[in-house]
Amino acid sequence: MGAVRAEFLKLKRSLSLVVVIALPVMAVVTGVANTLFSGQQPADGWHTLWLRVVVFYGLFPLTVGLAVLASLVWRVEHQGGNWNALMGRQVSSLRVVLAKTVVLTALALALQVVLVGGVTVAGKVAFDLPGFLPPRYLLVSLVIVVACVPVVALQSALSMVMRSFAAPVAVALPGAVAGVFLLMAGPSALSMALPYGLVGRATQLGTGAFADGGGVGAASVILLITAALGLTAVVVAGATAVLERVDVR
Image 1 (cartoon, rainbow, N blue to C red):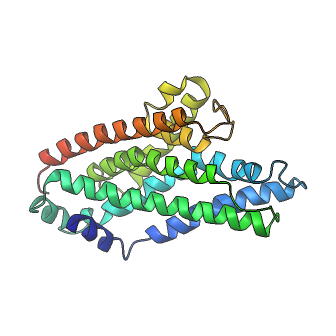
Image 2: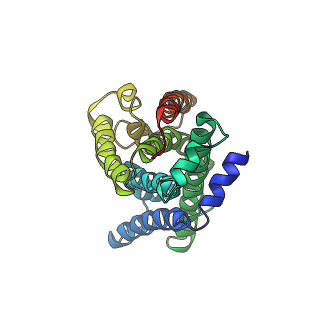
């Protein structure tokens, strides 16, 4: 827990909070604006609003946002003599990699909390929708957070080996494009083999977009979570092995 706490302390002066708030808020504003400009109320209530907000957000902005957060988490390590201090640490490489991944997962959770809150507020204020966001979308949100874990683990690994802040983010964009291509052209198993494709599929869960069937069944949820955990284990193991072999600069 000490390593995780230290990572959170490093974020105090970063722009991570700005990203966590601004990215989902922009997605909600865009979805609401598109609906208002159409001149029609959400035809299927909360489902239509969720669809308008989440579908595009999950394909590109979310992935890029996670990449930016990963670069922010590793930025301090690449400044001054901090990398040499990291290499002289008493903590194992696995604990360092896991601590970074845990912190990024917490930020991914915060992103989703802000998104759900924004959709709820928009639904009540902009469209006066009855009730509140259905529980199924809370379940989908949890699946999305779990699906974000292999992405943040991968982006963390890239930010670990690349001193440039922008380079790992630049990798995330074609990764997201590849994920969208797999969503559109390939079977579900193929898209879930790539972290970017997995998070894209998770965000489409229950929407009926792309290859999604429109339901939130137990089988789909379990499959997505299992794939996310498997990919995370592979990426964390690889990142740990790389960090073990890296020397001081």
